[in-house]
Length: 146
View (cartoon, rainbow, N blue to C red):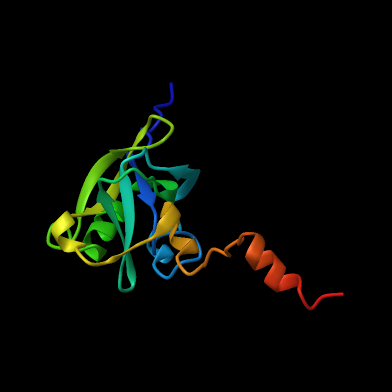
């Protein structure tokens, strides 16, 4: 009878900023299994802290991210990169689908005055909404067209 080795323990980690695929710190989790795209449950805000994204509890929005199954070693490396517990705190948070995942969270006093990212999507932080405009705007745009 062959003895089967136990599966390695993994942790569900929400990447919502620079750990996202294609972002500058993704190399830290790139060998981990991507579970899929997810959103946090309502009640989270995404802020820009210079070069990093910060997740904050509170508000009525949600945050877009990628869910990964990471090993203990990868989780520890991410903790070190996020300077746990000095800068960030790692918490288990609820996701929109009812499951939970580890995420790096900032305190409210750390994000005072920082820019909130509308829509909670780090990759869309530089996009600008194009205003539709009312009747006067449409008239002004079309007045010289023939």
